[in-house]
Every structure is written in structure tokens, then in C-alpha cells.
Length: 275
Length: 179
Image (spheres, helix red, strand yellow):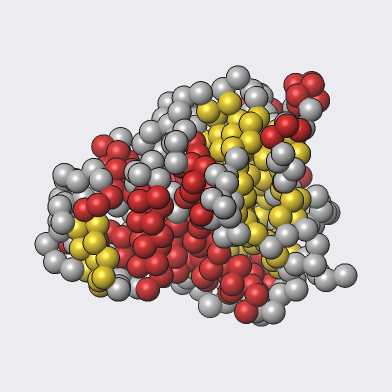
């Protein structure tokens, strides 16, 4: 049986756990996570994201292909969910609630709609001053990239958990426990083989920064999808109670369930494919 | 649930959930020796333990915004001039032991979580329990890699660690820099 090591570090504003069969693979995967953090953290003034928020309303800002691909996917989910997922609205809200710092030269956000973001290759423009928040999707991306790194390191197995955004691979399925956010009591079990699961929660006091609008009848949303980036973004769409959630789940080949404020767990069915 | 057709998740029976006792969930990732050899490979670290004096604690709090959870500064110096610092922080529901590696000029080289212990209710706030926990750390055999639970749904903020690292940097500046 393959060795199995788990390490944990504070990155991406949360705790990231990485499991693999050797230290070297784990180390490489943490470097990958660190790279995503350096590119997409709103707290680092020189990250790609902060440079966009500071300057992209004046001139095109060239970013790393990783950043561009996350922005592309964020726009995709913004369009498909008709704005239930919206990194510009989320950013404005996060800034207003003091969850983000304002960096030197960063304008106050005027835009509060995803359509003001323009991506041409790796060149990013904001057609109005805006604050982009990738917190609802970048963790998932980091998890996917870390999994790729573990596979490239020839680890026989791998599991990455970034604050509840989880992906794994290996000879045996990974059991995942889904917990109620406040009490942390187990409410459901999920098994992942070669895929991802993510959970987003609505916490009292509005501490869930990336969720500008939330269906108050829901406590948390869990999404299982082939990739963590999609699972991560979809939890926000499902938790908002969006009427487009079912369509979005189908597009990502994903499944979801929600925990209601009444304690009930309910599956959200992906929209059926038209015949 | 059966009528929904979903079978990719298992709902735990509500009754079980409701009566389940408050559990203490602990995950041990590394012991101190493992962290030391991972962060300072092939270097022999020399312990420089120190009991913080009230004036030092006050200075650290002033410089960093937080006071240490323990009076015992658990520091080791590396031959290259770097430092290995062992520390603990208490969150709302958790106690976390972590290690910070500093470069000779006092920059963070790496932060590693050694143990994450989660609990519910008043336990974390119970000082006696906390002391016992802190004391146990040294030399006690740790069961590594056992029973690591993969959990999704709890919102875990690493803010306490960020505060702790800031406090250790202030500690280095005030007490270790010329050590």
C-alpha cells in the first residue's frame, strides 16, 4: 500500500491540506498553491488581481495565463448564471464591508456588474473602475492546479482540501464528510474518486464574503463536479437560490445539495439535457 | 431523498446528528522533529527557550497587537542564523500548533501546521484544559497521519495564524534578533 502523508499550511486565507505519497510531491503542490495565492490574492498589492483593481480601468493590464483563465471561467459562470455569480459585484460588496484592503492608486468601485470586465488573451481591461473578487473561484482553481502538480510528481494518490474545496485522485475513493457550518456536525457523506466537491455556507452576520446575495432559506450548498474550480463557483450560484442553478449544474456535469435553514437536506437536480 | 434520484451523497440520519456528542477532532500532521528537519534540513538546531517576562509580553503585544498564548517562548536557533519557532493559537473552536521558520534576517521562510485540534463548547476556553494540552506537546508520542478527516463545509479562517506569525515576527525583532 502506498504511503500517505498529509501536510497543512495557512494559504489562500484558509488552511490548505495536501495528501500525497511523498514529501517532495506535497512540497511541489504547495508551491503551486503559493503561486495562485501570489497571483490572485486581493490582499497582496502586487498580485495580478490587485494590479487589475488598481489600473485596469486606465489601461490594459497584462496578467499570467493562470489569472486570465480564472477570469475567463468567472465570466463564463457570471453569464451562465445571469449574474448570480459575479466577481465584480462580490468585489464591490467585499470592499464596502471592509473585507478587502484598498491599495495605493486603487479607485473606488463604480461598476457592480461583470459585463464591465473585458478579457483579450492575457490582457485585462475594466471599462469602469471596479473591484474584482476571485475569492469565489480561485481556491477551486488552486486545488485543480495542485492536483495536476501531484499527478506530474507521480504521486500514486492525491487529495487537496483548501478550506472545504476538495479534489482527489488515486486507487481508492476518498470519503468526505460534509458538516454543518456553525456546529460542524456531520450532515452528509460524499465520496470522490477523480473529481471535486466544494461547500459554501451562509454564516450569520454576513461573514461569507464572496456571496453578495444569498437565499436566506439556505444554510450551505455542496457541489460535486469534475473540477474544483467549477464546484467552487457553482456553490455560490446554488446558494443564491438562482433559477439558473440547474442549468449551470448541467453545464459542468455537476450535482448539488443544499442544507436548509430548517435542517432539511435537499438535492438540486441538474437541468435535463434537451433530447 | 429516495424520490430525488440522487445517490452520490449519503444523508446522515437526523436523529444520529441530533444526539451525537460534541466531539473533539484532532489532526496531527507532523511532530516537532519532523517539522524541524523539513524546515532546516541537515542543520542541528539549538534550543533557546525563554520564559517571557511581563514587560516583554507587554512589548510584544504593543508591537503586534496580540499577546502570546503561553509565557514560554519555544525557539530554536539554526547554525545558519535562522530560527525555528513553535507556537500555538486559540481560535473560536480550535487550538492550532504551528511552526514558523525565519531566515537569519527575520523573514518568514515557511509556516507549517503541526496539529489542528477542534472542539466545541467551552473546552477551548477552559484554561486548565488548555494548559494540559500545551504541556503534552513535548516528548509525548504523537500518532501521525491517523484518522485524518476530510471535511467540507466548516468555514475555517487562518486569521489567528496570521496574527500569531505577526506576533512571532515582533518577538524576533524584540528578543531574538541579536541573540
